[in-house]
Amino acid sequence: MNTQQPMEDRLWNYIDGGCSPAEKSAIESLIASNREWQEKYRELLNVHQLLNDSELEAPSMRFTKNVMEEISRYHIAPATKSYLNKNVIRGIGAFFLTMIAGLLTFVLSQFKWSSGTHTSTSPIKLPSVDNLGLDKLNKIDYSKTFNSAWVIGFMLVLVVMGWVLLDMYIQQKKSQTT
Amino acid sequence: MHIELTDTEIIRRILQGDQAIFATLVQRYQQYVFTLVLRFTDNREDAEEISQDVFVKAYRSLADFRGDSKFSTWLYTVVRTTCITFLRKKKLDITSIDNERTFTQLENKESGFNANSIEQKSRHAMVNEAIRLLSPDDSQLITLFYKGEQSLEEIGRIMRLEPNTVKVRLHRARNRLREKLEKNFSHELKDLS
Image (cartoon, rainbow over the protein chains, first blue to last red):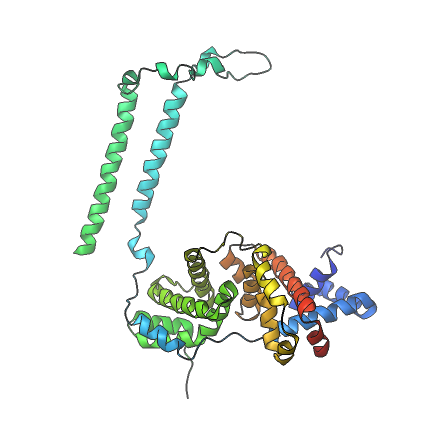
């Protein structure tokens, strides 16, 4: 253990019995030879013993009876594992991942990548701010965008996945009722 | 000869439909739960209500106890969530649960102890009073370590912390407790040493 570690931390470690044999003998010799260590050790040991001897607080005498009366109205719920279908969770995850991937692809496809200025210091062609089309946001022809085959295909995938999830959910409900 | 059932055996029997045996678990852990809840609320009436709620919730979700940790460890997670929900309902500021500032008010109130009444208090009461002056996180850490018989690894698992972090926090919590004891109970400490 690092000898620079504060004295109190080392002593607590020693009291808890969490130090190595080498560290233990080092601390024992410090306690035996050094007055400051001796006093601090006595101080911390006193707190440790107080905590060890302390008692837990007790609730009222009727406590157990009250709890038993209360639980008589309830049933044990089935284990969470038994009603959480991992396939449903995976399906929901896949649904959102596809949506995010689709949106990212769509956004990236809107950039005019080839029109960036290529210099020797920047080997990667970055889109110029002018070509991001931010200033032309209002001029976008949305009917064209949503008519493209790519967007329609993407929406179809989402709809199909939505149907699959709904089907899985209904199947699960059916199996629970039967 | 009476053989004491283990927690796992009791739970297995409860899950098989023996509801009455749950009383054994309640008796076994009521002081542990009540003390931990008191570290959160500092009000015995509230603590009793929350503790009952903890046992009801524990009973209802007993099927979720997988047995890969001690029952007391699992029970503590129920204590913590129940206390936080209760405090949220009471609209208390739980965001600063680590912050001792929240307890300044309590400390000011407590630091005005009547010297005569303190003299009459037992050593046990003195330690509990000092623990109450700490933040809930500090006081729970101390309770879990000393009274919950939880190892640093188990506390780390409950609190989602590395055992080393738990160790450092425990050292600090005990140092803060020592400061509280010295500040509020210096005479009693001298008598004890």
